[in-house]
Amino acid sequence: MARNFVRFGTLAMLGAVMHRVGVCLIVLTTSVLGYLTLEAMYPEVSPILPVAIYGASTYVISRLLMNVFSLAVDTTLYSFIITEEMKHRADFIPENLKSFIKQRDLEGEPSH
Image: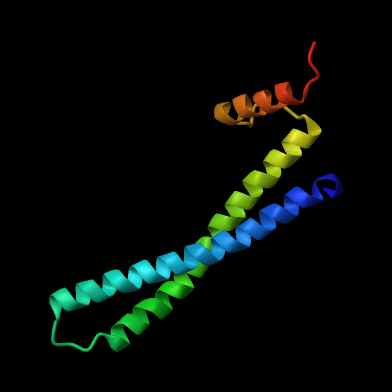
């Protein structure tokens, strides 16, 4: 891990940014769609309280969703870095990722 300190740090920073962007996007999209649905169904109702409830409940749910998503993404990226570092090639690596790892191995090899 010490040899890949910069890579782990970069992934952590990018993960935090993507987490915030994801939460904001989910809350904003749900609130806007909730507002449009409310206006289409009940145009005479004031939308302030219902949209605030949509936003608050969606914020909680989106935080939970993005925590699970970021955990899965971080685990995948950390596993890739460790697999690359240890040069461990096993059956658990998906075929598309195997070809990418093989390509990275060939780029790192000296020319013959």
